[in-house]
Structure formats: C-alpha cells, structure tokens
Image: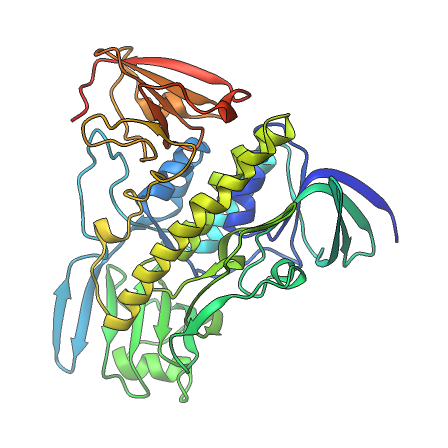
Length: 442
C-alpha cells in the first residue's frame, strides 16, 4: 500500500502524553491522527503515581472522577527487618482538600488504567488509536511534513509530535540526542504480581531479602501488587517473594527491566516537528514525575497548536519549548536528587503545583497577593456558587473579574496570562469566558 493521506497533526505514540495531546486537539475539532507501533495497548502498572497538578489537568479534560475511581490513595509503607516491622506514612502524605487545591494528594493509578480512561475520552470525542502503525521516516517541505509509516502508506501533516518514549523514532529522525547519564549500571526490575495471601493494605519492603531487596506496592485490583527490585531476582520472582513473606505468587501479570537515567534533549522543536514526554526527557522512577511531566507537555502544546492551525501567530509555538524545557530540567534535577539520596520526601517537592511560567513572554502584569503572572491559577469560589475550576473546564481562556476591579486572564491550560494588563496578542483567536469573584487573593 502506498496511499497518501492528509491531517493537521500526526501524533506518534499513544501513551499518556500522546493520548492527552490527541484529546486536547479533538475537543477543539482539530484533525489529528494518533498512531502507535505496538499492536495493542500497554498492559502494566509502570507509571502509577498521578500528581495533584495532573489531576487538575484531568479535571479540565473531564475525566478526573474516572481517574480517581480507577485508582486509590497511596498506602502506608511497612518495612520488614527480620521479625520486626516499622510503619511509615504514605508517599506524599495525607492532606485535606482546600478551596484552592481540590486534589491535594498523590493518587495511585496503574498506567494501563490511566491510558484506558484517556482512550475512552478520546473515543467520546470521535478519535481513536491506530495500533500496529509505526513511524519510519520524515521530510519537511515548506508548510507540510511528509511521513512514511510502517504500513506502507505516506501521510502529509501540518505538524508532527513525537510522544513515542525514550527510544523515540521521531527524536532519532531529527538527530537529537538525549543528553545526561544513566544513574545506575544495573537494570531495575518491575513486575505486576498476584499474591492473594499478602496484606493488601500496606506497601511492603524487605530491604534484606534473600536475593536482594524487594518492595511490593498494592494496586487497586484485589491481591495485585507492583513488585520493584534493584535487579531481577536470580532465584526467580516467585521464589524471591516466597522467601521474603512466605506467600505464594499466583500469577505474574507483567514484568520489565529498565536502566534508570536522567536525560533530556536541548530542543523540543525542529521546524514543524515537536517532542513531548519521554521522547524529550527521561526520568528515574523516584518522585513520580515522568508520566506527569509528559501529560503536562501535551497540555501546554495542545491549545497552542490548535490556535495556530486556526490562524493564530506561528510564534506562539515557540513558547512551547521556552516554557516546558526549563520545567523538565528542574523536574529532572529533583527526581535525580531523590534517586541518589533515596529520600522519601514528597508532597510540595513533587506535586507540581508550584511549577510556573513566570519568565514566559506570554505572562504580563504585576503580582496580586501571592500570585504572579505565569503561576497556576488556584481554584476559587465564584459569586454564582460554582467553582472556578468548573468554569475553566473546556477549551477557552477565562477572565476572572475580582471585586477590587482587577482582571486576571487565565490561559486555556490554567496558568495566569496577565494580571491588570491586556494579555499578549496571541490570545486573540482563543475564545474567552468571563466570571466574577468576590474572593480576596492574598
């Protein structure tokens, strides 16, 4: 087959990053195609930690309740040392929701469940994933990009976004390198294992287990745990677990090995081709940052692509790299530090609520209280009894009219564009909704 098809945006890779981007484009009625080289959806727990800021993104996408239902709070940790065991609080702690932060806690959702919820939302919007369809080669010519696919067809797109992971074929086609280093010369091991007789209320750790340390984190499915270890047990998964807890493994659902690394590219865009998620930055597992940073890459890029395709200034797309590359660098530094120090510190350090775009050229005006242009807009109670996050839900920008007369323009991705000034001209083509609030920000 050697047919030619056209689309506005080709998204390569149907993990959480690619799915989020496809949803952002589909709900703005932008023609896009989402492909993945795998012949079926991913089936393991891998990236299981959903940070508070990502839950807010999922609120905007209309799926947060489904994500919460698909997961559970992080369990308390129990460390076993011979006959003794010591209990610690859950990863990230336990926090009460507040007016400004409705989703304050790290939420445990196996990655395959997160992807299933995202695929369902995309299908509701009329989109779908083309599995068993890989990216092979690309050529940029003028205002078009031509891509050859593994199916034998060719495709012309206005833009291409590589969301195809650490071994990204799109990144390699651009000849961009992941700069950084491996954090270990050993392959870490992870598996989903079914253990009916093990206490499912705690995250169990045996640091002195025969054959090497073992951790078993309960997953939302009954009797299912995510096993992690510095290496694949030489004596076998079943034997290693039985030696640690005297429990029988009924089934190993999925297993994988990987080398922890801290790497990123120095460019997110070459011409009409972009990178997002693990294709642009690789994180160690500590801190639950990788999946979340990828989702937020897509959330930043989606509304900008849609605006430009509808006639907005092409320069808006330059702000994607300008805003997201420093964020990825900061997050990589944090997760690498947590990996090296084996620190259990979480919460404010990792929840991504404090990430901002203050230095962006899209941010203008002066601070009001603790809020600066470029900051994440907190949730607020509005005059009509609704919540600001509910009014912000959708594809529009939101103008918040304060009782003091100050106006705050909030971007479609929930960050403050301007305070007390006219927003930059790039928002001219973005629909806006105005809401009133008597809340005093301080």
